[in-house]
Image 1 (cartoon, helix red, strand yellow):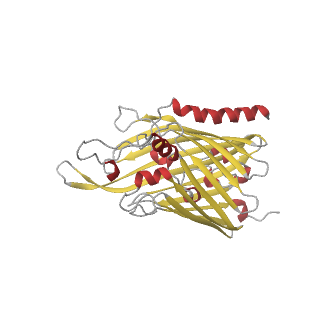
Image 2 (cartoon, helix red, strand yellow):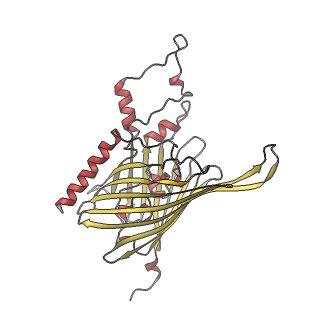
Image 3 (cartoon, one colour):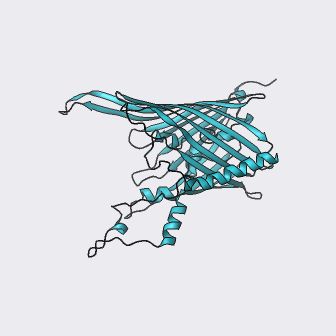
Length: 354
């Protein structure tokens, strides 16, 4: 058991050191970015794209494969997101456990960009076309020791935009520490290790949307409340950028120079862009409310003249008969908030047990 503890500590330190040497792509520079979008309503409610919670929720396995275990056996998860305009995304997944081998999941996630008008160079319309991206995933997880679990997702990805197409392959690897009482969980996830196999142009190969994440969950002992501290993009320290439309970034009308921020202010801003905080309160055993705050999302998508609730998210979950339902809204922009809906059920509940 001690050697597994040393392995987990090594991975933890590795996730901290790697940002200094890595040049991973973020901010839309990678391909197949829909893989990093939250699909589960429970995950979206706390403002991130993954959660370190070990309670058998199959919807969490898509982004954190170390959570795949026997508690998900014969469960089905479905999620749908009504995103902006005609864009929608979601997934469907199923899990099964095999003795001595481990627990597996199979899932399909997608993003549909809707229909577009096809036109020639003169503007003459020639019908319509659709665009979308799809990932076919096989996940695996098992325990290494009583408190340490590992997992991986293998993804085959395809994208089709009219007559243009692309494909790729990626792997997520993850490890989690789970306390004896299951009240503390920490997960390290290295997501989208892979490459584009065929490009849209047939020439230049684009990088994958690589990401390193480290998250913590604490379930309070005397209050039915879980709080989360979640980090992303640990491979890249500097997530800031200059927005020419930011009124605070306008050059001095006389000197033409922009006012430089203090070093401590820049450091704190960069640090907070890696963090999301959230919580889940269990009003009853079958009804939960959730909320979260994503600092990076707020800084990048807010409108200075009307900041509103950009960066905040909320949701709730409840059980009806054999189904667990979750709903959430996550504010990206003043224009509106996407609606997230997800459902899970265990097929064993539909059959009489002898």
